[in-house]
Image 1: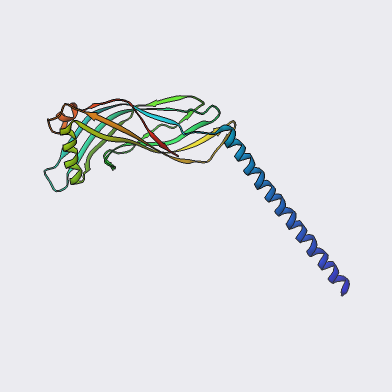
Image 2 (image 1 turned 90 degrees about the horizontal axis):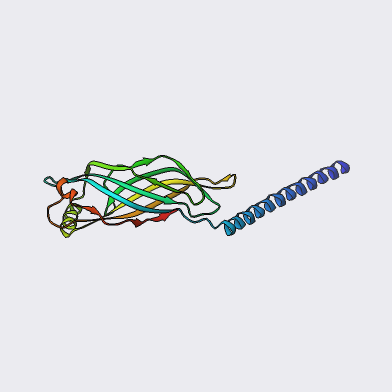
Length: 214
């Protein structure tokens, strides 16, 4: 009986030692992975892609406000440019949804851009048409829009919501959420309301840089 008990203790000791070795190996691998990731970050220092709004042509801006629920119909063609400033990191744009907003309210449907890979220092340009027929519009925003047009300055925002991946050599990261906000300044000579005829009097002021969050 005593011999069997000793063999059992010996087997338990071997199992404990094997578990300790496995834990040590896993811990060492985790530390090495962290060190490699830190070195890659310090060497590569990836920065966000740089977006700019190059142009915006307002084709329609119709506001129906003779009811308790105003509706806004908008159509605008925008030209977005993106540059990858990284020397060693490529960017996969897997999904980019673009829409127009006014005072944080979305006023057009989201338009999806075609997926693209952006290499080191590459520049890509998109020119989607954003449209929103009969979008319910908050009554207080209807008044604010009218005042903006009358004052000769309408500020809208082109927003991009999407997902990207980073590429370093043959390694490709998982997906990251990217959110881009581009201010769009439209100016007019003032007067004339904000119907289709008024929209033709609104002109894009100048290219603007966008805020990029990843």
